[in-house]
Structure formats: C-alpha cells, structure tokens
Length: 277
Ligand SMILES: [Zn+2]
Image (cartoon, rainbow, N blue to C red; front, side, top):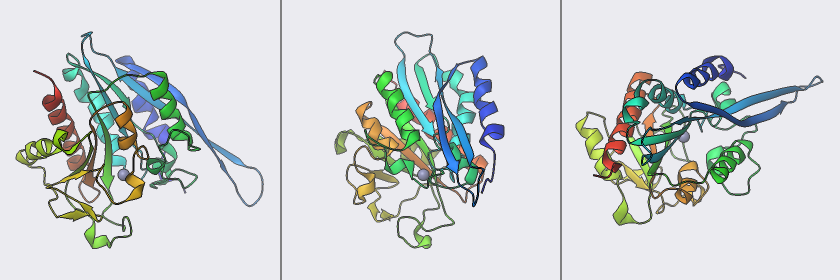
C-alpha cells in the first residue's frame, strides 16, 4: 500500500536541483500491480542522478547514494539536504555524483524491498534481474571513473528485528560499515572519533547483528553474513571504482533532524579527512 508519494515529495526536490547542477534521468523502473481482475496497473518511477561539477579541473570525484532501503528515508532526506544546502562549499575541491533515491517504489510503500519484494542492496551483481541495480551498474559502466570515496546513506530500523537477531539487539546509536583493500587502510575509526567529538553517539557494543563491531566500525571484507559479500551491496560493488566505500547507519528512533545532522557531519568529516594536503 502506498504510504507517500515519490512523485510529489521527492521528484520536485531533485528536479529543482537542475537550476544549479546537472540533473539527469538515467531511466525508469516499472512494476505491474496485479489486482484480482483487470485492469492491470503499471507503476513507473524515474531514477535520477545529480552531478555537481567543480570549476577545478583537478577536483576529486565523490560518489553518494541513498534511498536503497525504502523504509530508511532519513538517508535520502540527508542527501537531498546536502545537495540543496551544503554541496557548494565543497565544489572548489570535489565533483559529486549523487543518486538520491535508488528505490522509489520501496520509498512509496515504506518498505525495505522494492515493489517486487527484492532487497536491492543484496543483489548488486554484474548480471542482475533487479531493474534499479541494472540502471546504476549501467551508469557506472558508461561513466567509468575513480572516486576518492563513496558513501551509501542508510538508517537502521529500531522497530523490527534485523538479520534474525532479537529486536533488543538493534543499535540505537550511529555506526559505520567500511570496505577498503586491507585492514591497515581503514579510515572509518578516524571518522568515528571525529564524529564522537561532535556529540554523535557511537554504538560501541562488541557485535552488531553478529558481526564484529570495533568501536562503531564494521569492516565488511571480514564479515560472516554472506549477503554482505563482494559486489552484492552498493557499498561492496563500489570497490570496483574506489578504495574506500562506506555505509553510515543512524537508528530510526532518532528524530529526522538528528539523523540528517549525523549524515551531514559524517560526509563533511570524510571530505575533510580524504582531501590530500
Ligand atoms: Zn539500509
């Protein structure tokens, strides 16, 4: 059942960005809604990318995405807020390629999965039948470039069990997944310590959903859950294009304001930290 409108709430905000940046529709995803009897309803959603270009020809490329899980709208609102209000101050040093909403049908239904009940963040493989992922993979293939880092903004539900664990195990503080070529090259700990200094509460329990949590950081090449394996999630897939990919998680029990503040601080700290001297 539709809980909110992508067309009314999100599309106008993305299209308004075209006054400042290059906004492009990379394609549509379409679903058939089968009722007991005809007619058959067709649902169609455009997927957009926003490119904020630096005037500096030597600027570094950053990849940002959100809205992969439809019941985690905080990431999507954070990325829109960044593009609307913050991005310009970073343009002297960076180009931004952003996908504000990769799962519009999930957003409308307030569901983790897309309309076909597929978790698109567990099917990011090179050959996939998932339309949203095909569009993203095609874009990345057609526009090959190296990114300094990538961030896929998520929320972590606090009102439902996750990964077969008891609901009491759901973190109620910020934490971060990171993929990097090896353990030594991880940057997440430094980002987390800086976030903590800015009063963002960090989840420090030893395990999160049975994965080893090191003071707020889950390093994904070293995980038990096979669903986090290489190339299955946006974060792990992005390892083809960057050495560092992150998935920040804020708990859904936080206010939207706190969620947005945490994601924006994480991004600004990462930009500062990764900018070579
Ligand atoms: Zn998520």
